[in-house]
Amino acid sequence: MHVLRTLRMKAKGTLIPIGGNEDKGIEEHEVYHLEFIEEGILSRVVKESGGKDALIIIIPTASSIPVEVGDNYLQAFGKLGCTNLHVMDIRDREQSESTKNIELMKKAACVMFSGGNQSKITEKISGTTLHKIMMERYEKEKFVIAGTSAGAMCMSEEMIAGGSSQESFIKGAVKMKEGMAFIPELIIDSHFIRRGRFGRMAEAVAKYPDLIGVGLAEDTGLVIKNNTFKVIGSGMVILFNARKAKHNNHHLLDEGTPMSLTNLKTHILANGDRFNIKKKRVKVSPMELPVVER
Image (cartoon, rainbow, N blue to C red; front, side):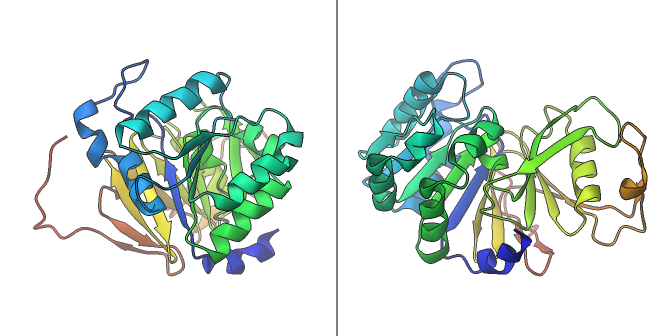
């Protein structure tokens, strides 16, 4: 499947992976700030999709409570003035072959994957006609694919499917599966700072050193287009680059064995910073820009 990487680099669409806990302007189990929603990540999703009248499809497949999650996004996008919203509640793989869902996806400007369990997304959607339409539209049109938490992690080709955050750098602490492959050059993890996921991302890039690891903090996302991503939101993004690691013993060790990895290159990026995926170059915001407190 790695042969797809060159093809995907030329995609005309936009990906917006989000680290979770994005501001929805509602107060539930997470911390939300209504006064910032119009300046936040979901507002950027709407803008990239073409505005308030764009058809946005919400897919809560990853969630264990898809009805409630779908309603939350309807409320959140509704607060932003969106008038053309649809929840595509896919619970069985057969629904990804449904004529109704396929025709709706052909008309959509944006698809938004919710958080939950990323493996549910791949099990119910990956390889289906619905997935192929999303891939084709992303490659050839100005189509937006957004996703939060699990919905962000599934965008990778080599997808983090789970693994212990508490384990130190132990081989086998991270579980990998085949993802949706919208962005094969990256491995994406979410809730990165709050849940302490440094170890499992370090192992992921040790296992796949040709890929760039992207750890997204909560209420933080990327706008990926034209081989470059820009950081949006209130938190930080940590990049892991093991391409020039001087010592990487991952392939030599048995599972459960402590690992060592030297010369792992990392970057910490914040709102406005950019990264060229093809050239592996960082461009940070000018120092003279004012810092705006949230």
